[in-house]
Image (cartoon, rainbow, N blue to C red; front, side, top):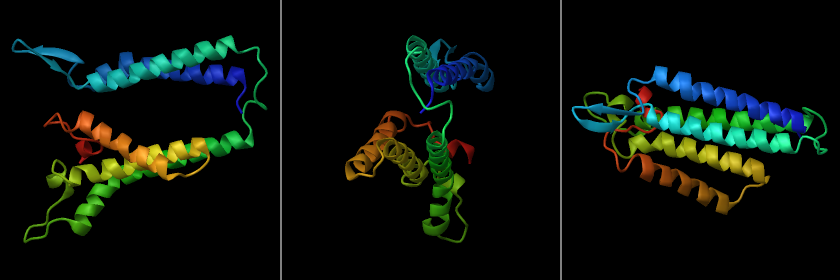
Length: 191
């Protein structure tokens, strides 16, 4: 278990990184600002969603820093970094890497194996905006990420957790994909 001072430094590190994302990375890496006007119409720009996500990290990191600072005199942890902490972080990294790999490669592999056949070869890039191909990677990778992390934190696998994980991914699809015609779910924008 991490000591209070290490928790404070981790929270501070995430606070700084998320502030850099909000004020430097997202504005300079996006083609349009969060909200912009074009021909007297107001639009949500490319920077809006990443800026909202990074702002959420700023808020969570600030709360974590505040709570860690208030509890800094309490006894806690076996030291700054023990073996169980290393195993936990390695498992988190492994789950994230495997879920991102699934998210990135599941769609193209599915098209290569089960895609429409004909005289001309069809690529994933041509099908990335059509159902069901646009959801394959997002569902498999998202489910793996949510189910893997929650199961790791709980310390066990359960059918209830699997159901809630798939429901969480479906809710994200309903929020971010269904109402909008031009949004491509990750990682489809890269193909």
